[in-house]
Image 1 (cartoon, helix red, strand yellow):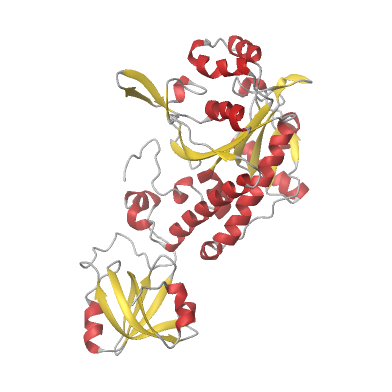
Image 2 (cartoon, rainbow, N blue to C red):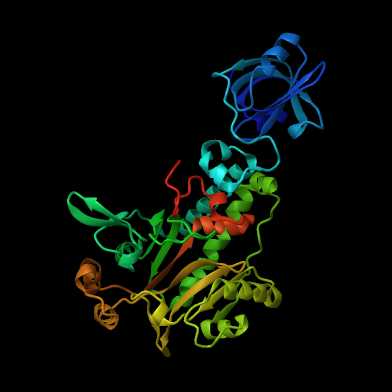
Length: 428
């Protein structure tokens, strides 16, 4: 008899079926035992009245893996409106050692460090698993939205010979006796691939050796990178970002509906045109000094509140960041060279996306590096490509974990990361 999932039981009322999963919960009453079995799809209730089977179930701790064969009976108060009766229960392994927290409770009561120390079992909890399903759906929507617009998925090296933006923020390693680094981003490679495919994207890990110990930073996270050629300026990039986000949110709604229900959340509405303010205006709105070179977290929160109040939007573009705070490859605003053709996208008062138009002329790269006192040699392989003709281009990068955390209302990005890597954590 072929195994079926818990979500398929409602279509088998009156039939005999086989399910398998983990012992999620046992309720041992005087004359009946209720066994809740958890599989990848959800929960199934098993009603046990036979004395021998009840004794066997009583000896199986939570998280033991079992197989159940029984008859499907309709019951409106059971999970999904059905339950299994007259069952046989067979362990598929030894009795499990219970984890240091109860997975059958509606919420995990253990501290986050305890959950992370025991991540392989903590992730089994429906709320933790639901966040990862939302993440998977978001990535599927990201790919689908860009595939539909003739973008090509690429895969770039994660071990590089020089840093992308700052040598102080990279992890160094030995590469057969040579110095090498874990890539901070695929920035250089995705720009070079614009010269091949015009429109490219990548889903992959990036590494930042920044000693942050905050709820919004990880030393390794998943970056959703996009680059496109033949743009007029950064506004073309912003339009693609808006449509990509629409695809991601649509996919979360259609592919992760059960996960959203488990988490008690809804997908936010994305405006047809995301409101945008220039950096100088953003400072005024946030009540910051006019000479501030960047937005602090408090400024971002104030801007998020303003966007909701003024535009009914959870999203806000801030454009025209000062060139002094943007990477050397950023294209300046031709009308205001001290400011950039770059932007950040805030989501619920938190910076989610950084992007903009890039330089595309070889001489401009040489000048930009010289202006910052940077030598050309470490970037020679990258900059050389611009001697061979590159179109005006731009792109953006979305931090996946930060997006999901904001979407589901998690207080810490580690809550939506399976096995986070940060200042303190290298295991499990």
